[in-house]
Image (cartoon, rainbow, N blue to C red; front, top):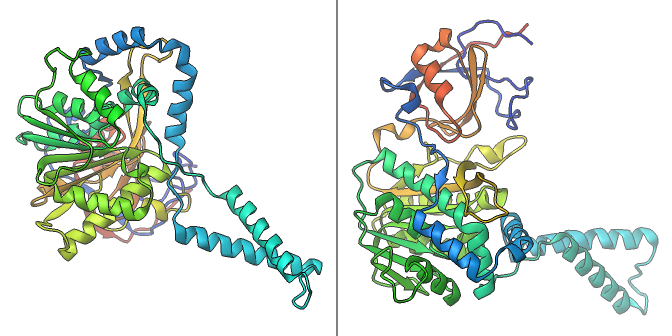
Length: 457
């Protein structure tokens, strides 16, 4: 199908399946783009957020080699792969209300089936037996369709599996999210960081790698004593007597009551809480501990995105209603707006996720480069930045001959498919978009719409 030249900047192109998001909101109106800044280097435009493949800190790589010799990892490589896949596919626990609704639907279907078969008689002497049989069938069907969520008990052996399989990927995702704060606010110099659900200390290492010269206090909070012991061992370079590589790290099993930090982070933690009530309470508690930025990271799956959206709605609601103290917060990233997320409203919804390449630990079974897929939220205190309304690219950019396809989350709360050309949008916008990657912000302004119909031939 060939498209005529027209004035459309963003329009529907659903007949050409160029991405998984081929089903999106169809509009007859148009949106025009205007560059917000003058770009000197198109490959280094101000909205660029992606990083090159992340390298693990050299001391950490050497230490994992030492631990690999002490605890032979090659013999348990299958266990590491299985545990990693289990964590990535792990879903949220089913809420009691949802469980009751499912049980009622199943019971209604079972009773209809009994009535149609003539097995259900109200005045029969075996009513109790019939009801018991119905309950057994309902429970059996409910178990088959309900995800069995169980809390993880991290002991020493499981902690080592977690370190070998997940620490490097979590470190890469956290570096990418911290890098967004560092690039957009170069003058930001935090003095303290709190990691809720710190695990083996991936976020502590990422904060040290990003703002190490300015940070003086690190607070690692994890319920597992084995995780805290392993994290301490890694920070001290593998020896208890040795001077720690990162100074000022304090370990806690619960949130310290009188501690407030510039940056508070929770990586892959909220999804491990037993229910929505606990997640909401945790988000509120973390926001009270936050001086500048609250960073939440989860798996780039639908379950992980649901957790992020739940936390986002909670923080926005509290900021607007004034439930929490000093609630002058706003969504810093990745959303350019605070309206309802448009992605779950699509015909075929996909999670809002991003990717980061990284060089994993030098174990024999690891590939040279891996990719971590994640969803995240940065909630900030203070006033919104001038460039806060720049649209975000939420899918891979597809470069074609003389045009570029990109999918944008826009400041008006809509999800749009943009086709950028040099002739219709100018050299700067075209070359900037062509150099962008998945997760970058496009430094353009959305102009008022014009009612132009799309013509096709």
